[in-house]
Image (cartoon, rainbow, N blue to C red; front, top):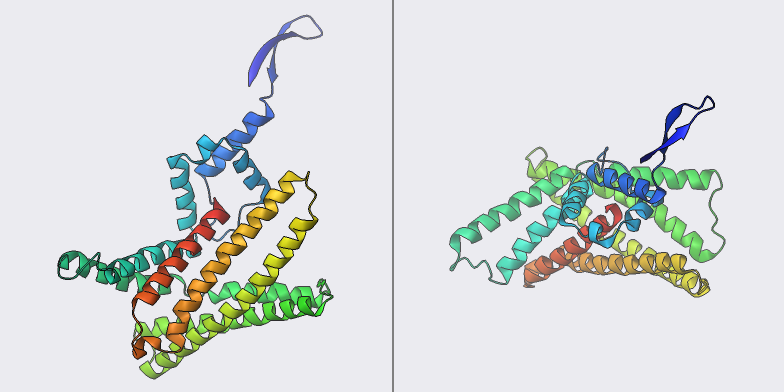
Length: 301
């Protein structure tokens, strides 16, 4: 902001305040948002305008370590963000123990501490995700509103199937959340062991179903983005970059689903009792955690 000299109608000397350049205003707003990244821990993803402001910042600012720490703080304020970061640590330690990096003979103390950390993080993650089924309930309500008010634009059998699966997946998520909450109650000793065992089996199987539905949606969503890329004009660089970014995240999501598929298959079919190595779940869980954390990071950076 600058101040220049001017004169009023009476000829008196009056300072004139000039507005700062628009580019400076944008940078100051972006800096303010990074310093106060999240007013509400349950707020939704940043708007397109705030994302565009962040992207307009020079690269040296966006990769600044302090900015990355602020982004991490933003992620940790989210329930899903805390869960993903703790999952990375949990399965990272399990993978290290399976690879004998933290060997019980060579590093008995570290191995013991890692075992305790894995156990505590597993329980903590379940606790912080209590009532997480409310997200699926919210999704179900929104889908029901679309169908009730005729907002659905499905015209082909494939689109109708995708909408049906979206509603069904929301219901699966609600019941799966109830089962997960019963598992937590069982671990706390609130419910009897038979009910805890049945809830564990149900939760695993419902998660398995949701993985297939999510994979189906991912494949069709990826195909839709590819069609838009083909139809996109060559001179529309911003639109093309946006579509390419979405396509990349679709690939990341699919890779995470495959890691979840491997992990969940072992639980559903009790392959661990049939002699399969613990390393399969350790590595697949670690990969799923890394990819899940990356998705949350990109969404809220």
